[in-house]
Length: 442
Image (cartoon, rainbow, N blue to C red; front, side):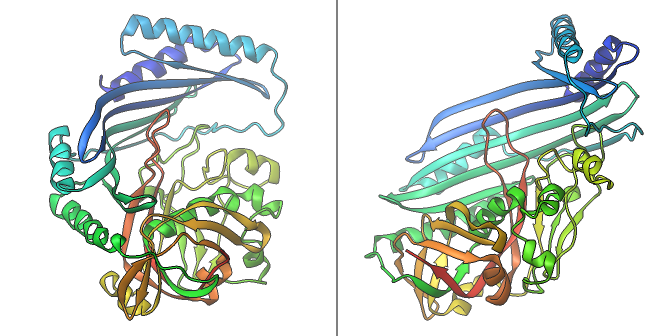
């Protein structure tokens, strides 16, 4: 199936079914992916998926209703399914109440972005897993292929986004809760880069056999690997940057906005749509700018503004999704060399990953979570022992503010490995962070 041609056909069909007095919006999602699930360094479940889902919205006055349908690529069958979906949406529209915050793009702005890449074949991916996992228990999932998004409306607007990517998310399992976690994701696979990442993870395995180090709760010098930074920003993204959270003072950056708290001047964060995997348009037809500065030199810069929030608060939208969540986070790099991170840490905690993140004091930017996988105790720049599981409870105004000592010059591109229903296109490009005093409570 050629997704681009199928989208054009789908949009034309829906437009033809739209009646006078109605406006139709068509959102198209297409995916062609290969999957490999493996453990004990052997492939247990190979598979391929081709999927197309279309959501149709009908709008009349201030009323709106929608219906979704999956398509097959067979013209007659798809025409029947689309007609049924339009009829379903029209029936729902008759009883829909007026929506005071209804917003959709009425000034057509069409666009097209196609980014094809040379992805590894399934055979090459299997070879990589077998090579890296030889003599080890390698556990994880590989997903790769093409993802396409399309938007059309009956006003003549057409937007198209098509990209290829891969995501190999795995760990070398040791025992109990000990494992060396790793990820390789992007748009251009090279064996050399994969071997480097796998080699770094493999070096950690023998260290996990050492007796576990137990430390008392308190503040410690710490290095947060990009995967750990990813978990922090991933949690903060829920409610941190949206205009609605800003106006209702539900953002953890309230103190930064008020001027009663500040982040380190080296902390700059933006929604970098142009260099991410997510489409440059959203479900109501509004086109996103190439990037939105969220934090600049430690100061709160701007919000993500959905069309509904724009209507509610009387401002202009910048094309954010309904939840006002970032999809392509980009954190500025620092000057710390990645291969000197342990030397610069000296004695303290190397945090490879975190999980179970949550707010402990949302308005003051305090978060809590647990260390995960191979977090290590370091002395004089050398790893000496695996660390027992610890609970952090600290403020962004400390570990990204007063206590931040440096960010790495090298950054990692991390793609959300979620594939429930469809592969995620959310991504983050992040450095590691050296913190002079990071607080643990348990």
